[in-house]
Image (cartoon, rainbow over all chains, first blue to last red; front, side, top):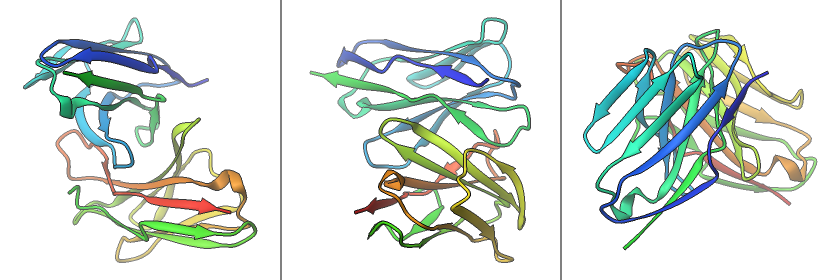
Length: 110
Length: 113
């Protein structure tokens, strides 16, 4: 079956670093995406990994280990506006649909 | 603004009714995806169209159907509505992004009373 696991909630303070983990078990793999979603709004694309390793994009980085079925999203220098839900999604074998985890709600406090 | 538009923004209806949700993809994107997001289930893939043809099906109920028209806009039809169909329905499109990532519309919030 298809399964993507993320922690339900995380809290952090402004200026800190937080790591959001994602483990997946899917029938196929054509890449892993991270999306950010503020409450009631559309998900917005953050990052993409298809090969093992770290991809850095400003304050956000994402890591992938295909052999372990594991990814993480690293957010540095946290700001209040980073309070949102972070969704891990795997592109399945057909290379079409995204299979989403239930998301991690991050709360950043001052 | 992702460039994907959805109408209406909100929809309130009664059980047993039928509604149509509309989506216009980003200019040039040929693929359109529909997702349902409820509080307990997260984002669930319903169906994908590519250039007018059905490409992939997810957890879409038989009461739900979709189509993509020659101008590439898509409609999702939900019939015999039940209370449990209340959710946010998102449309996404892809084709022009560097990673072929999906760009999501603002969603339609459906409330079934």
